Figure: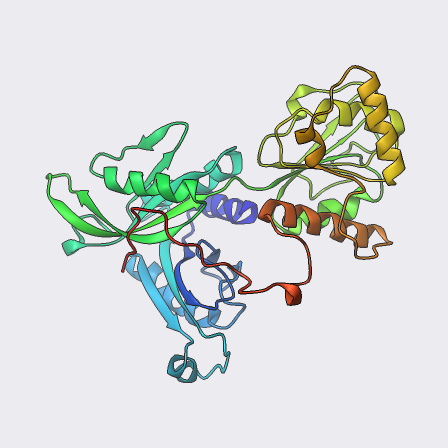
Length: 386
């Protein structure tokens, strides 16, 4: 999402059009799930993938039509049975996709383009999920397709007069961590009540990784986290290590004098933390300061006995260690994949962070019973769309 925003911002500044493609509905087995996005550029370049490359060429052709006409549209692909044979792909995925193509045109439709840009910007800075409600289809197009509103828990719904039912459904979906194409009733500016197909997307904050320690083994961790499109901050007490030139992919590099801790780098609920300074006193300081914060993941590099000693020292300094603090502590950090090199260790760490964020075990998929992606029942009061 970070890369998509940066590219959209460049296109906004250069007044160059593009198309944002979003999966709004699926059936059966699909490569990506509802909410997956890609950005289709005029040059033919596509950032992100929706089907693993199966239908990207066709999506690009549709995107060109969207740019020419200046109007959004929905395209559908069905790989089930005869649909798969029709495409001649032989994928055997046994699934279907509905993809929403929305033009981003800073010249012909600056308000829609600015709205899209603001959604991506909000996701970069958000610390809690929020909802984006997009009209896909309405009776007689009395509410133009592509019209959007934002709703979140902190600020309520923004400019949603007439969208009250959609905002209520958005709240239900947000609580269930779901995105869905739904059927709702809205009021036009004339007060008419009409049926609307509305895609309501729960936008999660961009995952953030806070790394304490700028040693050589932090370099592959930063690079791999950026490949996942995460926001990455590196903190170190050594000027030669806390250097943006040393970590060009990082979004932020912070120098903390030895023995100090700046509250401004403390993480939030969207942040995962890894401590890897290889400096005992610094690790003790950071671990003691970070344990009370309400973030979901805290990993410490190093042997188990070293971490146990760190915890004893922290407790002896008057910091009470609660069950909740210890439950989020991952030490030694990472999954047991036999990692040896810094690159392998980075893979092990990020795999555990992803599993933790997803509430998964990290075990091989072949040992999982049932589908890879669980089909969760819709929240009460949510009606499917078209």
